[in-house]
Image (cartoon, rainbow, N blue to C red; front, side):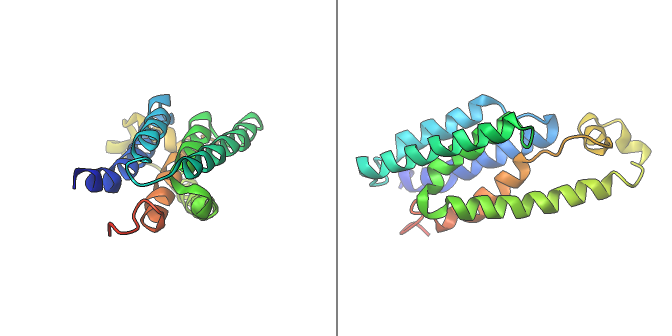
Length: 167
């Protein structure tokens, strides 16, 4: 029973934390990605994953880390986004990583359009003093893509092998 609740909530909670932290600070701490990896490695055997399945998920996560670090090196995404995407891919596995990537891209597009729209209107005086909101409102500023990754993770997670039989 405790394992079921852990499986249901650990991944979404960590992803939501990553998105919220990125929104407020424009960074995602390494500890979030490390927690995702550690939780995967701790929970996978108890969820019935065999060594071959765990190895496949780890290989996929490592491959996604290589891809996303290359994207970071080209300036396309932030370093925290790269690490969170790779760590989340461990949880998504081969069956759902593409779904996760596509939905993250769609959510990221919507997020970017919303932020660009926000930047075209003046902030009300009462909100202008909020550091995180001022940072979002700055023309040419970054987009906290961790929000899109969190949304995609929460959307796709119920379809993963982790949830089969639980919901």
